[in-house]
Image 1 (tube, rainbow, N blue to C red):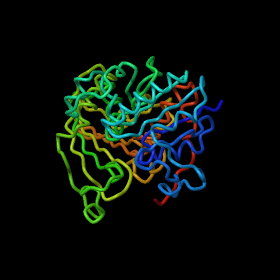
Image 2 (cartoon, helix red, strand yellow):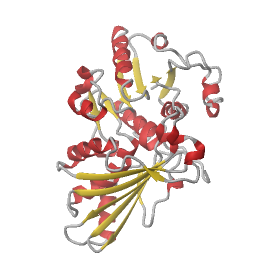
Image 3 (cartoon, one colour):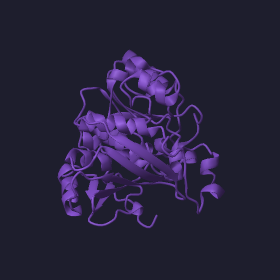
Image 4 (cartoon, rainbow, N blue to C red):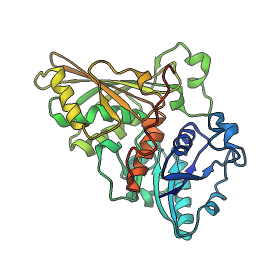
Length: 351
């Protein structure tokens, strides 16, 4: 079984990671890498690390890629386009795919289909939703927290949201804590996207650490909405994000008050039970370290309790588990493939 795959917004960091993962996937083959800004350019010129994988392959423009997918066939459509830009290109792609009789599943890595209503989206992003009619066709969750959806398409949560939800959902479901979570998270510079800006300029970021948008980050409503959907309880999340002096990865530390003090081992065992069927989530006995998850789809979670306080630490790669890898997990599931297909290659050490 080989399914043609198309990546929209393929020249950004997340798009590049999706291309990298597709290059060794046993069931998906790249049919087109779509980029309006880099159309005609060789993939190897934009991503030298992919030169061997995509030798002689160039980016297609938004108006050219459909011809590369056979009529009446299947299509795995990934969107790595930015927030606000993803929904329109997905809508156009679905219209073109329908004209060619394609059976399509979409996974969107942007925020455009993470909310269940256009009003929620507009309240957070300050713009009207670009394709509100498509919202009911998308389902949003961390793959480990939901079964295969009835909806034909999936939206992957943001990278910060993924790291927080992996730590928060089992804790809230255990019933041992109050519904108020205090979260500190540090992200690498790739989380700000490929376009240079002050927050990712190397002299500012190197050997530096600083908070930004404390208690006001736009991922908080997304996290709270997804927590309610997964746990059937309304939790209050107090989140302080930080910019770290590294390129990739997210490290989250979450604190909560326990209703009745329990031991670290008890909470850790609750996490192990919750994730016992989740190949990519590892509960460690000690403290998770960021370098252990870089360039792979794993999440590593640690737990520590003292008195009535519990701390849960969550480490992921923002570009893989928090974006491209999680998107590939969803696409595998939408096509009834093994969830780990294309995601089990060893990652580099000493990054």
